[in-house]
Amino acid sequence: MPYINAFFQPRKNEDRPRVVPDGAVNFAFIGQFAETPRDTIFTTEYSIRTGMESVYTLLNVDRGVPEVWGSKYDIRELLRACYFGIDKKPITEIKLNLKEKEMLRILLKRVKGTDIELLLKDSGLIE
Ligand SMILES: Cc1cc2nc3c(=O)[nH]c(=O)nc-3n(C[C@H](O)[C@H](O)[C@H](O)COP(=O)(O)OP(=O)(O)OC[C@H]3O[C@@H](n4cnc5c(N)ncnc54)[C@H](O)[C@@H]3O)c2cc1C
Image (cartoon, rainbow, N blue to C red; front, side):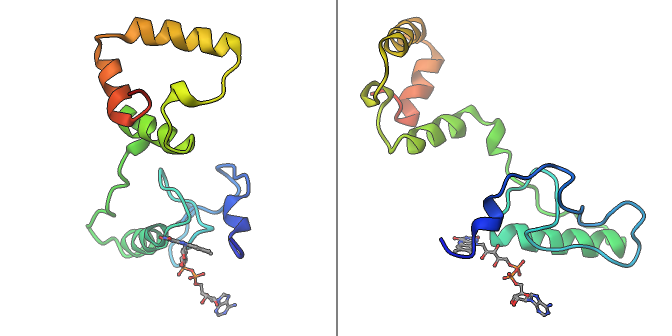
């Protein structure tokens, strides 16, 4: 995708300024290259959130910026993301070496009849 390379460059926490840097009282940074907690760039929501955060913080507006949904802490979403990450195939269909196949066999045996098996099924990773 043209024009999008900068978004996908490796990024450390201190690489980009916080929306309202410590001590700032009359300026803020907004948009994709300002840092706001928890969110992921490459969305229009990110830009909007930074705008809200800057106005609410600088003008002491007593309103919360809409929460970022914590999908990275939700095992169901993470498993589903893995499923999409391997082109929507069950794990049994991906190319594995002998050792990996054996580990997978042991894992699937261990989780049989457990909630983990249900979660794996729901995600599409096993059938
Ligand atoms: C290929 C691609 C696909 C995308 N797909 C999605 C998607 O599916 N969903 C999604 O949510 N987001 C998507 N995004 C991201 C989304 O488009 C951007 O995050 C969003 O548009 C950023 O909005 P913004 O207002 O912060 O900045 P921008 O839209 O970049 O606006 C910044 C504006 O400032 C102007 N400007 C720059 N410098 C100056 C200057 N010195 N003086 C005056 N004006 C200046 C620019 O011309 C521009 O108009 C995509 C982005 C790209 C590139």
